[in-house]
Amino acid sequence: MYCIHCRAPVRYNRALVREHDGRTLAGLCSECEREQFGRVLRGGYADPSGACLFCSRPGALALPVHRIDLDDGPDDHSETRGYPVEATTPRLCDGHAGEAFGLKAERLRSEATLATYAVDDD
Ligand SMILES: [Zn+2]
Ligand SMILES: [Zn+2]
Image 1: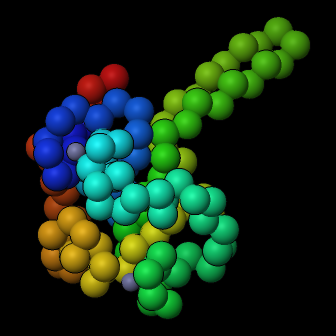
Image 2: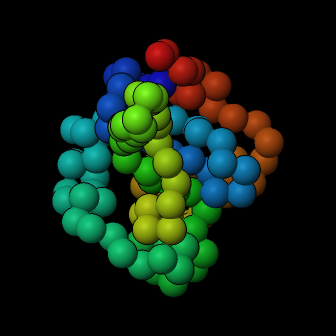
């Protein structure tokens, strides 16, 4: 997966996930995240309404952070890695997603994906 801004490989930072079908469009590296959002995305976003981080419109793009869940059962040791989208995951509406990432609203709604960015390199 590659950063939507600088196109550097993104391994463990943040992903851009389209809300309506859960498809990953691209990654966001930590440098670009800091440059663009400062600490806003890190600062404990706790609005479970699914609204945009910057306005009250519904979120079209979720920005989940990479997470490793360890599940230590009695005889089972499993590990889930990924970018889970949850109620408190920061979201942007199509307008703010367009402003932040140059993603057109049609792109957020269409079935097409940004294949070059969303390559899974795991
Ligand atoms: Zn970047
Ligand atoms: Zn917005």
